[in-house]
Image (cartoon, rainbow over all chains, first blue to last red; front, top):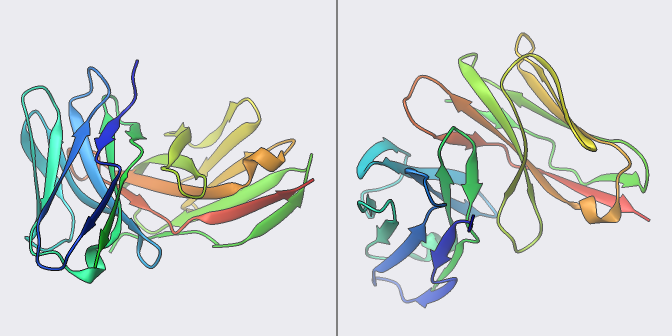
Length: 110
Length: 113
């Protein structure tokens, strides 16, 4: 089976812009979770989607949002980018509880 | 606040030795425990998971769980230089229906030839 894919892999944006990241889970997996990884804060949970519904949400501002489509593909959006949003954004897919990560999207905000 | 604690390291072991990585967690409701390996510049890779007290072995890796002590560990036998990476402990509780994991800060392991 193909693994989790994320696009784009690298992104450079300017403060104030918005960005959309995409994730395609492992075939058959209906749960997609998003995480932010930074050197200072480590890996932090953003939100989880299951069957097109947000099932859990982490402690991030409303500028961070997401959605899931009927084919389980998911997108996350960050509006009004701040310098502190520079991070590796990871998507993980799950079917039985174990989560498998994609390669991540490296976002740099200048 | 649910916390997962790991010694940041680096933990340095010689090639062929046993590496022991430790993790403690604060939430007694935690039910599932995961170890991920992350190479520099790469995403985390799931290497072990454990749900019940005791030991679980998979090749050179053994995960150990002690819920009474709120402690989970990962042993790597016959450590190889290719095992040099950051090891992340993650914990999931069942007070929510979903798949939210809380991660520790990771332990950097260095295996010296």
